[in-house]
Length: 303
Ligand SMILES: N[C@@H](CCC(=O)N[C@@H](CS)C(=O)NCC(=O)O)C(=O)O
Image 1 (cartoon, helix red, strand yellow):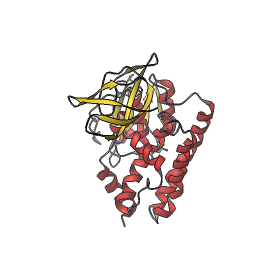
Image 2 (image 1 turned 135 degrees about the vertical axis):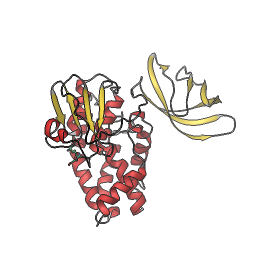
Image 3 (image 1 turned 60 degrees about the horizontal axis):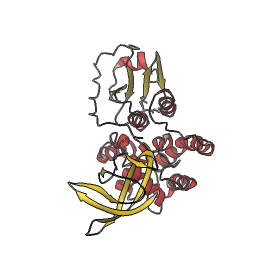
Image 4 (image 1 turned 90 degrees about the vertical axis):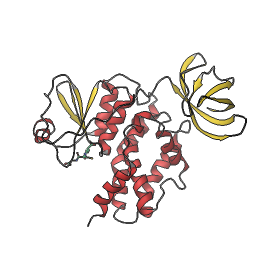
């Protein structure tokens, strides 16, 4: 929904003053408090004010989503496990997500966990991929990769399977739509993730501005498919989660090292990145962009 109303800045917050669509209370620059809208409770997210004139008149756009979708809470990153650390007792009832802060595959599962409000339920066990404890490959995950989830006597791997697993086996907002057409498109988008990553990673050894274009165009076109929301399936979903950790890295590295802005000429992609950057569950998982640049330089430019 797009709206225009009068806002009054007060104590650093903007408080709602006038408007027909809902009865509002205080809201911060980016988020409204839960507010009544047509009888149902909603979060109203204030997307970037377009302009603010002197007399507190702000023109803005609103995106509306059901109450409290993002259940993440602020969390301190647990320290990375020492290679000499003892193995926690396997299958003792604790649900553990073995992860690595630098891993985009693991980040997918981390965002899903946060968004669904499972931070107390699923414990993060961050590993250093350069020096994993021996027991990880020997007793927990034979492929020695992250992410893996220890749950109900099983070890489950593969990030795309895992985000679907979390979505269907744990409480919290469902991150896949019910709509048939959207479900079908979700599968198409999941299936393209490996191709997407391959095209871009391969281009880093050549000329990304030419070679990576089709991958980003694919996302730009996908974002046009359902035009009633800023996300791939309108509402934030597992599909956005599948792509964003990789887009985050490519965006930073291509811009910094190749001076190639993946959002130039791709307005939907630009808006999508901006929207996702407002999602707490995701924000909490982001590394310093400088770290991405350094890691990518080591990986793709080391001779
Ligand atoms: N297809 C897997 C890929 C996972 C993966 O490659 N993880 C990397 C870190 S980003 C890893 O654990 N690498 C360790 C290794 O290969 O030794 C998934 O989607 O979960």
